[in-house]
Image (cartoon, rainbow, N blue to C red; front, side, top):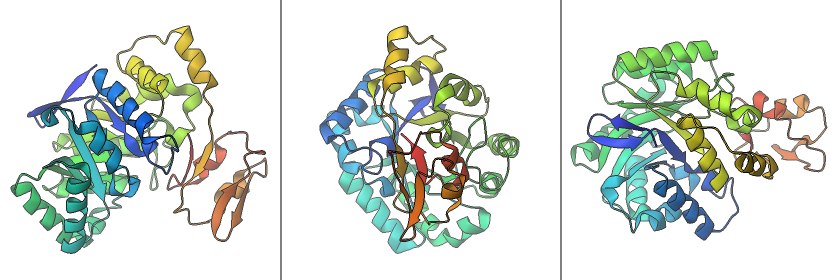
Length: 315
């Protein structure tokens, strides 16, 4: 496993386990099997785990970390807190449900730009008090927007930036992959820790995973890479990619034969762009939400490319 250094104080694995893939939003497996995956990843050298209040999976992580040396783990979470009350709620919920005394990283979820950040500044001030008290070790933002990455340099409070990065620029809401790379470069020059997300484009770069992984892994400004993994084979494959090792034939076959499905998040806004794009007529808008007929879906993923908010994923 390749390790990086988090603000020169605590080593973390360059590969971060994105646990949205273990939430009920995307995964209906048992808690026991999900915890087995986390333990397997940990045994393989992954010690950085990203979650969020939205994922509603703190209970799984609580069981995972209970028998670990807490100081060997990096736990990151995030929420949409916007004032003191919601900040207190988010932190207290995370501490209680994870059964931990502190959070290594806490972020404001899906920030659009600096004005958005300022609009949530009452929450930020509260998070800074938690940081002063040692309850939050580091603070940051997650975003799908170039503008938010650029604006992060205006705020000393932001230590970590969690931007969307993939070789096709899929899901970037206000520019191209070139625009995002330039913004990331600026953020890094201003000493921001860069944690990359959505490197497989919400699931629809899975036919070219090695190239997609290498693209992000070769960006010098990227400190760590968050990947959602729902099988042992996916964990093994991403570690192989990270360490530049070849996948053996057995692993390749298992990955090829893994069942995939289309997931539409419950917060879909029903814009209809995905349904228009679908040439199989597998998608339709019902009661303001997108619905999929899996008997028609061919998992081409073209619909996912139409959803700027990543509400559609192949998993």
